[in-house]
Image (cartoon, rainbow, N blue to C red; front, side, top):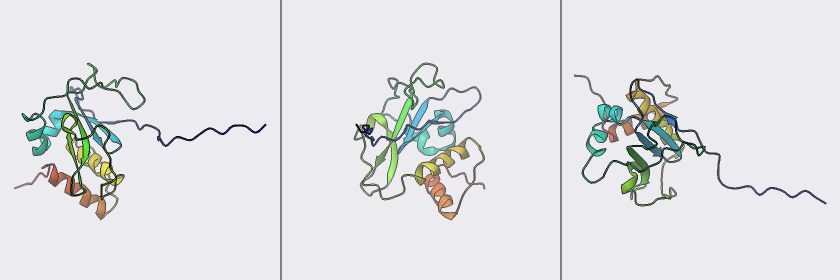
Length: 165
């Protein structure tokens, strides 16, 4: 009798969140850029981004005190001592086919459909990670001019370009 084949599922293995560390600070924000998850500190984002300074605590949203801090393997994230993130932001596709981060509480869908996105869902999280590396003063490599342009575009959108006089 032939052996039964296991049915493959479409779910890909869950990725480990990319966590940024800062001495003396507990991570309090989870940012989901497409399928990539970043765990960071709102203080660092507010320090280096006028966008996050303005919108993280804006009156149209409340800090997210109810989100469980689970890592992608299903266990509790050891980086968050109280089991919740103060903020959770997710990717939303705009009407023009671009993407942006919005507070999870303001997202139009719980399970977003990224099919309308016109860009590269693999390169954009990479560029966002590089933006965070810049905020945390962590070194990184730029592969080509397209990578540099993506990082600069995100820095511009999130008002994180630091101009020297």
